[in-house]
Picture (tube, helix red, strand yellow):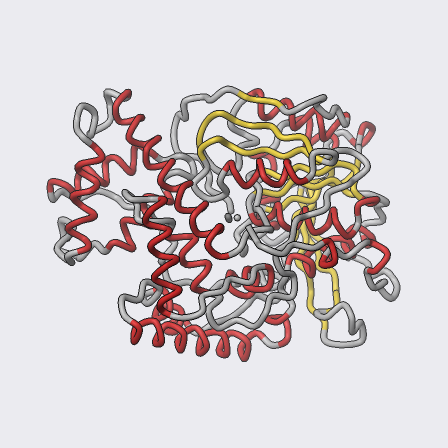
Length: 483
């Protein structure tokens, strides 16, 4: 995910002393995971939906655990989250052996959990037809279409709330942070360690604000800036995707194996975008390719990055041949808890169609080739019919006993480097920033430099004396795109 609010006050930050206490400590009953995944245990933790009403409705938080492979030198628990919002921590932890180094697996119990409203933790449910209708309408061209989008957003929100129940109104990152602390207590741990990617970094920030003394070590990888107003959020997202686009252009220029090598990739792309804007662009099967599809593909290819596939798709589209587009595009109709989470954490204000046009113009100024960030645009319009956020934007206060390690790539299409720089600048006493000079989203596994720095920090609390820089490494192929 992706940042300046005018009036930011420390008053919105809840100190640990103000956090309501849990009545007793629930326990987790561990059992083999479905499919008998070796080395893992699964369980659930019963928690209140509304923490201020511990006697009210409850839900089961889905949890899994990969125990430390060297119990003698075990450090503690490492909570992990892949972002989203809507990513399954249980699934992410289930891939721990492929993601984390042997040192991390030896020293920590890897703890995955599905955040409330996600996957195994009472998921948000919505009508698929309304989801499709909403996703098809997020670029209104007239005041009438804008009014129709607002109506659809209201209908979708009401439908999701009716199908999901009270959970729908308790989906903020603060709610997730409170669940994390309840999980820590249920595990019998005095302190936790945390690794979160993308939106998972917001969960970490909220935990650090509320429970600073219960954090041993925290890594936030590809950081969400929770201090941005609507225009700053949109324009920074737009700049990030435009930057990723130009990095792709450079890759084509230096890579002889690219089908666009030696060609003017910018001119080809601009031509495709112009045709799509005239509703005149089709693929080899005669299917219309929209500007929304182009925007989505342009944003998605920067995650890994996945330059070879994107170049093949653009080249084929340009000459009318078949090629694979991204399999799981952002616009694909799926019912997920994105709006419920995002709109609980951000007040995105779009007053009317005129204001919408002003914001869209600002997107275009910052991203003339890719026409803004589809992800950022979809996020802000998703909150059109939402009530005020329960965890509104504010400058985070990160003051844990050991400094928080922040990671970010220089060219991230989703959580711009400028976001990480801003959060670090606001919290220089409590954070250290590792800047990866390359590309992609979620950078821990990218190079020996990013891995070793993170591993040494987590295992031995070797906090770098100052900010670090890890050199770019040419990607060998697409990486997983968490967050």
